Length: 204
Image 1 (cartoon, rainbow, N blue to C red):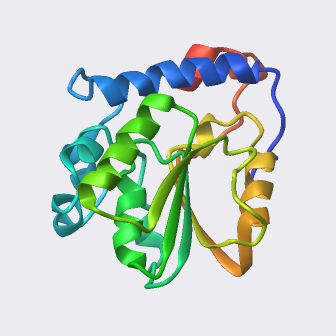
Image 2: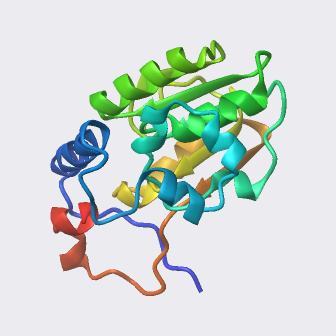
C-alpha cells in the first residue's frame, strides 16, 4: 500500500538554498567525495552503457549524481521532445540529445547556476544544437503545456517537499500519451513529520 503525497512544514526556500550549495560543490569539486556516489563509477553501478558515457564531455560525467537510470524504463527515439527535470551537469540530457538526434529537442531544467553553466559548456563541447538548459524548478517548469514526449528525472523528486505539485507539472508539460521515466529514492514506511522539517536530512 502506498502512502499519500502530502505537503510538509519544511521551508522550501531554505531547502533550495541547501540543495544549491550541495550541488554547486558537486559541480565545482566533483572529486571531493560526497555521501553519495558520483561520476563514471556511479554510471557503471547504474547500468549506463559505456558507449554512452564515453561519448560525453568529461565535465558532465565527473559531476553526474543520480540514483538510477531513467533510460532503462523505455526507449527514447529520434525526433522526440524530452524534458530532464533537475538536469545537473547535463549527463542524462546529453544522452537524451544523442538519442533524439538533430530532429528532436531536449530541455534540461535545473535551479543550481553552477550546474547550468557546466551543462551548457558540455553541450557546446559535444556540438549538440538540439539541447538547451533553462533555470527553473521542478514545481514550475519553464516549458509550455503539452510540449514533451518524455519527461525524465534522476534523483530529484525526493528533494522536492510537495511531490504532488511536481507530478502535476510533469503531466502539464507532457503530450497526450507522453511518458514519465524517472529514477529516484523510495521509502518503505512513512517518514516522521519531525524528520521532514530537518533540512540536513533532506540533503544528507
